[in-house]
Length: 174
Image 1 (spheres, rainbow, N blue to C red):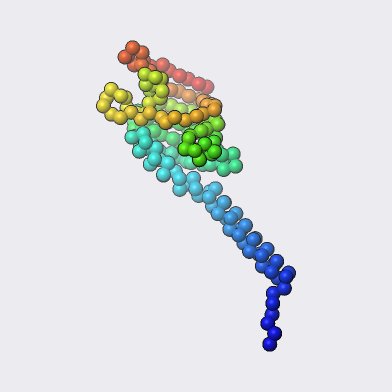
Image 2: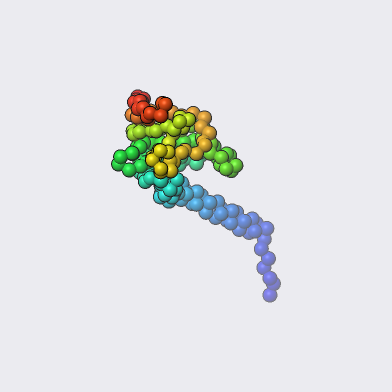
């Protein structure tokens, strides 16, 4: 009996089939990540933000566009009933190369329809939920390098200190 040895063309055919199968598997994983990753990441993002800020945070919908490096959150609510800050849509173009270095960098942040109170500390940095005088730990935003901020349809009360007294200013952006 003579042993059959695979011919060169059958080897190439098997290699081509193997490469096609690997390519199809990668495409399936990519499509699944595109559609399912935001649903899986939303509860994690809510828990992480709630823990960092010390108040409830809810996100109605989380989405991402990997090719444009854009993350979008819709129907974002921060805080309880008394000190709530709500945003219809928040999108950020992430600088992925900075994340590898442990920095937060955003090319552009678009904030649509924010409503609520934004309090500033003595250095005019935003403080979320709590003041330094009431004994609670104030949640101060982390250092973030933002290239551009776009604000639309805003109705905010800006609370800022002047000589130890808090003052309110209304900010409306159409």
